[in-house]
Amino acid sequence: ALAELAAVPRICERLRAWLQLSDFDAHADLVCAEIAALRQASGALLGSEALKHFISLVLRYGNELNAGTARGNAKAISLHALTALGAFKSADNSTSLLRFLADEHEAVFGALVEELAPLAHRVAEAGERRDLAKAVKDAREQLAVVVREIAQHGNGRM
Image (cartoon, rainbow, N blue to C red):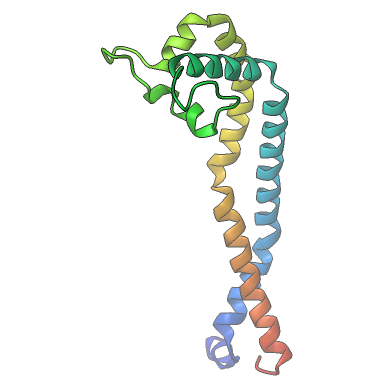
C-alpha cells in the first residue's frame, strides 16, 4: 500500500493541499470569531461614556502638565499616550500618572473598569486562541498551497 502511495506523482504536495483544505473551514471560523470579538470591542469602546470621560481627564491633565510647550493645548491624544500613562512617573518615582489619575478620580476609573472589564475578558479570550494577523497569514498560506496544487493539476502535472 505504501509503495502504491509512493508511486503517486506529487503525493506529499497533494496530501498537504488536502490537509490544508480540510482544516480551512475551522481556521476561517476561528478568524471570523476573533474578528467579531474585535468588532464588538471596537463598538463598545466607541460608545463608552466612561472611556470618553477618562480620555478627557487625561487630555486635561496632559495640557496642564505641558502648558507653555508645543504639546500644550492639545485637542486629542494618541493611543500610544494612553498606553504610556503608567510610564510617566512622579519626580520622586513613587507613583505614575495613571495611578494618580486613578486615585484622584476613583469614580471615573471605577465606571471605566466596570464597563470595560467584561469586554477586555472576551477580547483576551479571543486573543488567547492566537494572534489574528498570524491567523490571517496562515490562512493565506494554506490557500496558496491549495491554489498551487490546483494549478499543477490544471497543467496536467498531478
